[in-house]
Length: 327
Ligand code: DP6
Image (tube, rainbow, N blue to C red; front, side, top):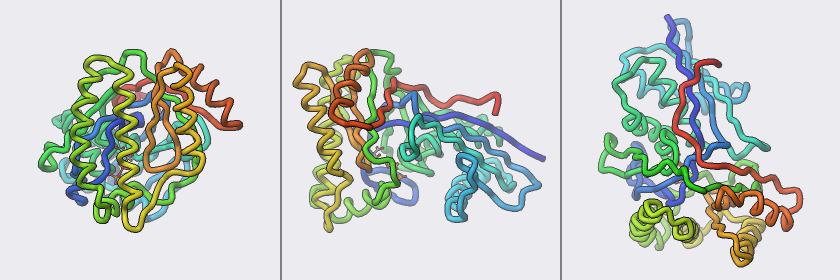
């Protein structure tokens, strides 16, 4: 007996960041967050549950992953096996589609694709997309938001069942993102460790939680009004507030590299030249520039002038999870 499912999920970038867990086992965050799903970056995943398999296995981009990686996947798949009341082992195959050197692939697309593929394989048709986001969350917090396309809010909720994604807007207006790939190597401090350390030791952390609520409410108004400038200003400020919490941690740390600061200044120059553009930065040195989709080429040209040899990824907003009919 064999059950199979295959799905695509796109990466999302938070404009209002998730940075800290109220419950680390259940991945319940301290704050709600809001993201934009991206078209250019995605993961395709096929999962096969079979009575013939003796153990779970996982291959990423054609490469078998270590026992440690497989253990994480197994724990995640157990949520679905429990729900479906089956104990078949599984084979998971994933391909990350990142249009440049490796390193930008994210756990957000990975766990939402695996969640959707598992729901399909085990015929858990009673699980709605919204409920599916609560499953994706258990693999990686940011994966909660990749179930849907466009602007998505992850409502922190009060318990596992209601800490879930809610679609806010299709983002079918003139919005784009130019990703500056400053360093595509593995990050030095994972977001998981970084947020836990910050929550525990940064005196700025309570203020982050307080301010994040205000930023979220304001950005939702900006989205509703399709006010791009306000949206950009709030997203940029929120990202810097997150990074400020890490600098105030004990011991202090930062995800910024020298080129990150240089990129921030370049975006400020770009803005001074009359092109509306705003940056956001996650748990790594890369800078993501939010701009008008219709101005992405201009933005890239301006930045390429200051950063020789840099690879840029230009993307418009992307869709939610999609079933793959062929593998
Ligand atoms: C800075 O979702 O990678 O990108 O839940 O521990 O897997 P875990 O962390 P992860 O954290 C993402 C942090 C962030 C901000 C965000 O995406 O909201």
